[in-house]
Amino acid sequence: MKEQKIDTSEVADYPSKKGKTTITPEVLETIARLTALSVPGVSRMAEAPGSVDKIFRRGLPDGVRIVVELDIVTFDLYLVLKNDVSILDVSRNVQRNVCRAISEMVGMTVDWVNIHVEDIYFPETPGQAKEA
Image (cartoon, rainbow, N blue to C red; front, top):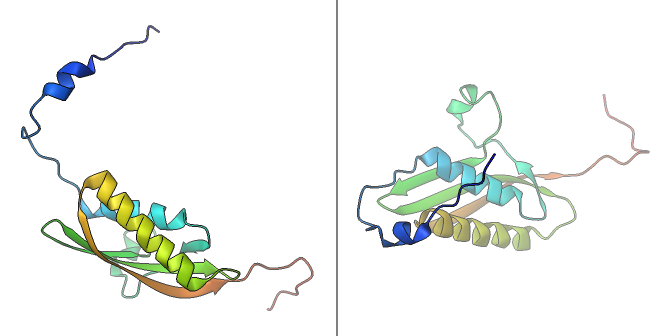
């Protein structure tokens, strides 16, 4: 198959005011979730309290709640952290990375990123007995 090349000089001159881009809240949730999970020390997302829509999302914990007003977003992230990390450092890294990702990817302003540590994950050791 022959590779096609696109002339980007025409694209760069195209007026930026033609049309609009709409971003659903689910996209913002996905960006925040994936960004939080990429931070060292985060084990997984926890289920957000009062999560009625979990039935419609196949019961998976989503761990993200957002409020969008105009172009300003507020996040509540519900996390399970690993046991050998500084909760303060991990929380700050998640806040910083989520703000940066939302700002760079969609150009929206992030007002708050509230971190809720719901649990700490302790991995089982090979000699540890399982409780019944």
